[in-house]
View 1 (spheres, rainbow, N blue to C red):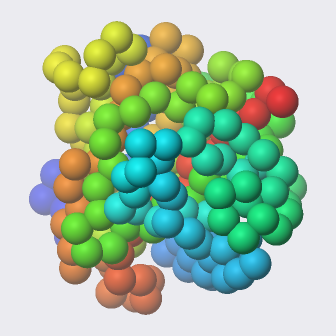
View 2 (cartoon, rainbow, N blue to C red; view 1 turned 180 degrees about the vertical axis):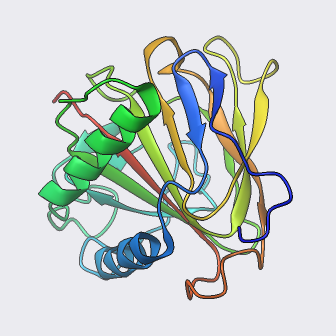
Length: 214
């Protein structure tokens, strides 16, 4: 954000979990938003995720590469319109490798092949959960666009404390791998109306990149 009194520092939130503020500049944010809008269109577009117990996630989702549904992956939108999942572009994989390398200070060759893109509007939230349906332990890359959120990053044993609340703004990068790869995490709050005015987005988009190992 322009005019910060105190610059937001790069922070290691837990071993293997790193937050880098403003990793994406304004031009890259707009380009990524344009791509997300294209991916959200049907077929295999933005959908409401329903859990096995009959509930629904308040954040809506679209997938690339592999389609995630609770709690498995498929090549088609198995819990939606049944169409093939949209392809995962090479440039997005390169972005994931660069992001993970920047955050963890080590070159990344991991073949990122999954994107889960969650859209938060209104009162959307995300409960504490682990990204544990992949066969790979490669780091998870998370990019934020739009409204600021509270990102709650916990531990690997329980959904409850100890956890750390991190403010994620548009353009921020969060990467977690190594001993934090299976940490519980969630989004208890989104601050509406906080997106950069020039971005042209009402709400929050989270682009999560993973390596399937499938």
